[in-house]
Amino acid sequence: MTANSLLSTSQQVARLVGSTVGGILIAYTGEATVIAINAITFFVSLAFIQFIRYEYTPK
Image 1 (cartoon, one colour):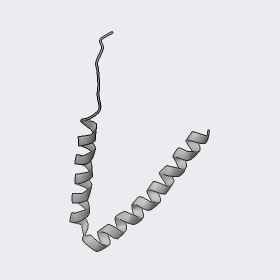
Image 2 (cartoon, rainbow, N blue to C red):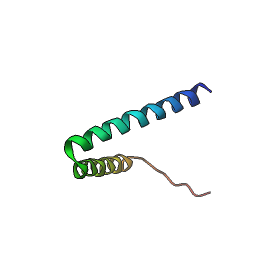
Image 3 (tube, rainbow, N blue to C red):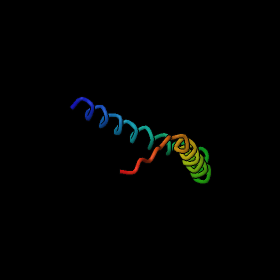
């Protein structure tokens, strides 16, 4: 129950902070810059995913 509570709280804080930061970035830099930043974060995620080790063992 504690873990679910913490997860829910962190999700709500992320929504609030993310929307605020996104709005501020759009106001100061414009939509194209924010879309470019978003694309870069997807490529960073892809780079980290490449480091996940996966071993397949057939059943």
